[in-house]
Amino acid sequence: MRKLLILFLAFAIASPLFSQQIQQIPLIEVEGYAERKIAPDEAVFSISLEEKAMKVNDAVNVLNKKTQNLAEALKKGKIKDYKLVADNYSVDVNRIYRSGTARDSGYVARQGLRIVTSATNEDLQKIVDAIQGSGDMSYNLHFGIAEATRKSLEDTLLTEALKDAEARAMLIGTTLALKGLRVFNVTMEPNYRPQPMYMMNAKAAAPESADMLIQTEEQAITKRVYVKYTY
Image 1 (cartoon, rainbow, N blue to C red):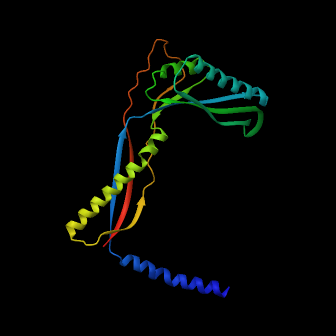
Image 2 (cartoon, rainbow, N blue to C red; image 1 turned 90 degrees about the vertical axis):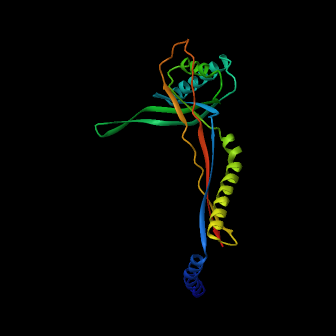
Image 3 (cartoon, rainbow, N blue to C red; image 1 turned 30 degrees about the vertical axis):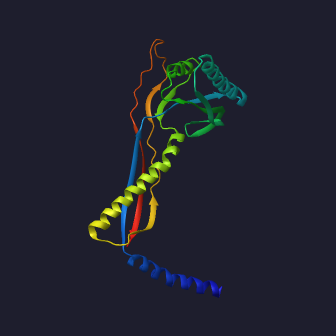
């Protein structure tokens, strides 16, 4: 116990001294920034399914049937290059509140479906037709940048941001005649993810002859760093 007390007191004394030494180190801090604007390369149809029934099996079976109908409709439409993903599956008691009291009324089954494809896929309208022909389904369609694309640009953007910070530091050093600039600390800002662009929220069927004509805007992927130099 005595040893711990001595160590604590030593640390308490040393901490202000260390902080004071850090404050006495001459520092300049610069920001480095890099940005790439690219067109969205991924389209995602998001579908939320919900079914209520007095028995668990009934709710689950109807939910599974809708999912199966959609999978078969997509296959029947001969749609190219897509991926159907099911997630967030749950079954809960359907609890109803009335006049301040709660009572159970069967069960509610929920599941999320996502149809992921290329933003330039020529079969986007066929996907819409498949969704609308598979039962009582509404969907959201949004366009964004695929995770693989983000990762492929990560190192490039970081390199450009660091070089930008270095160039600014060198400019400051040359202008103010600071000698022996060297890196003291580097901090990276958390990655910014641009919000996906939601293009439509639809439930009612569109005319069969309608074509889906969509123009997407470019989205920016950025990287920001903060570099401290000492001299």
